[in-house]
Length: 386
Image 1 (cartoon, rainbow, N blue to C red):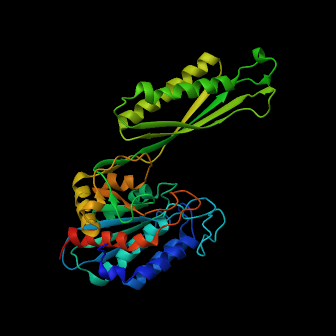
Image 2: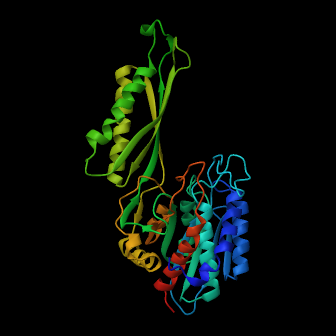
Image 3: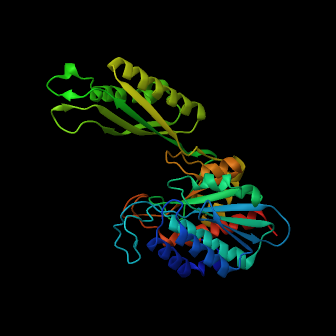
């Protein structure tokens, strides 16, 4: 890979950073040790400004280039997942029930590598804002950082981010203009019936049969109410009712996820869930309550910035290793809030063979750290030449 030669010199150092972060995972907004580690490295690099405590533990660093110009934003997420690690690595998680199973330790490392290079060379005009964000997995830290004014305070013009993907060829880049990742909502339905002896169902109002009917009806939303040419997923992931074989329970519980790209489709699904909940409850003579938790919006890349980022990726990895028209992903990402606030692009970076994301055996591939750091650095230098 034609990575930046100077960044290639950092490879061992970056591996050390990444493995330290991997051994010390933190969840959601409580990334105190991670943020302190990031700030310490940034001070060593000699960045011009370090702003801490954004979205509780987020860090924004400013590096000034040579000459006037705009500010380009680069974002990395820092938080881990509430999982037990089974990698057996000598740098495995030291914190019970927490692990970096999505590679955010590597994302932070790639941005630190770019920061070291950019602070040393300053071969660009304007400024770069390096945004180290907590709570991507849960909590919407990207939204909180936007709400707390990072885009306006630092006058960010465009914003970019990377995510590693095991299973894609090492060093390949994948992106697309427009929607790239889905909006995610969560639905919960609570049913209240009248329980009783399983031998005398006529004396009960059975939430079990009502729950089954609701689930069957929910499965028709995408197949019968949604245009099949579009993209949408409604998945029931939990059904709970009852405790023993001879008792009809009082209550039932249904839970699931909604994935959409279009706000009109999202609204239609919400309306159909409401109608199914009310109609089925009425038909079975019990009460039911629908709770909708609106999650991250769809991650929508801006066409101009996506084309530009893909060109930079080609400079790093070659034409054959960049796919700038990949399909949409049903996963979700809170970088979506930053892309709602500013133009920009989100790209995937192939990590080669290995356990998948959110798997207890996942481990970030350190071989891609110099590639990602080179991409970030070239992005700045190309967007804002001296």
